[in-house]
Image 1 (tube, rainbow, N blue to C red):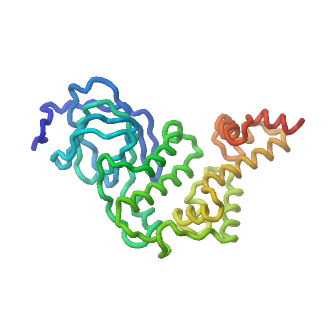
Image 2 (cartoon, one colour; image 1 turned 135 degrees about the vertical axis):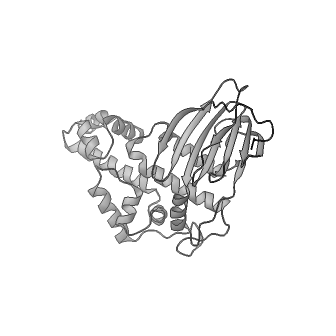
Image 3 (tube, rainbow, N blue to C red; image 1 turned 45 degrees about the horizontal axis):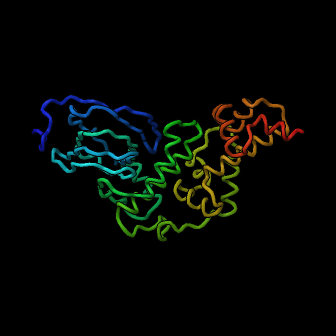
Length: 301
């Protein structure tokens, strides 16, 4: 059956330019950009998946068409900072009729169910699909993800986990069933902090694994908690995310080694869990205000 509404006769596909991409166990993300002639733009099928797609526009997307199950459901543009939310179990096809620059996220249904059940009580609902929605929270979350998307560091896993949890929580609250309650029976978002013993167990795990790649799931499991419950309870108790806290522990350990030892910067970066010396130098300089070598020299005057 042909597409309606001026569907091109010849299915020639012009793939967009992928600027950057990342894939984690919880989230797939990519940034696509295309500039050029759109006179011969043709309908492109969107691969189906048991997942939801979130597309966030980084610039005005003046004109495109979107079909679902071969029926035209959108013809027009999307403004910069707007988002589309679609269920990829449906058969979609699109036709790009103008330049675009967007970030595309894909969250699998099993991940949505897993994290949703950790965050909220009851069955995780389907999400209401959107086209061109203005969503300030998703804008901030996508902006926070961009540095890791454009230049992912090996130590970014916990940060991306945290952002994915925040995205799922927001999508379910805003586009899912209303009045959802936290998995502990209280209103969503109202969590008590960790107990002293739980904080001690978290610190124990981090100190023992500082040189390794630590994930949010690892710490939560050690504390006998779900990933989502731990993340929220930790923020309530400490006033910072687990990612920020682990980064502080790594920097504090690095400062101690710089001050007390003659280890090379490469050895210190490895012992403190940074991916390499360059990564260590960037994080240290950004947070401390001096490069590691200069800071060591200052401490030894």
